[in-house]
Amino acid sequence: MVQAYILIQTEVGKAAGVARQIASIPGVTQAEDVTGPYDVIVRTQANNVDELGKLVVAQIQAVEGITRTLTCPIVHI
Image (cartoon, rainbow, N blue to C red; front, side):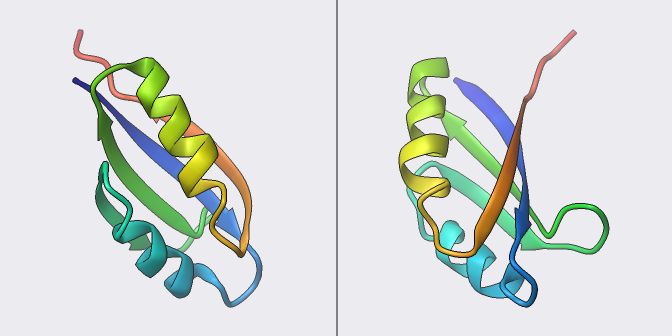
């Protein structure tokens, strides 16, 4: 299992709606609108890195109102 945080910047005023839409995507375990340099932080899980990439590119980045994403895979050291 691969888990990651996705840090998202949105168009002005779109954060809450983007978080709601993303929360319903399979593989997303949490989506919160926040303040600071990013507007939404999402926690995801997938079976492998390839599935994680498909989740981010094909589903999360397709949500209207997103301007930029940064994927941060979780590592256990």
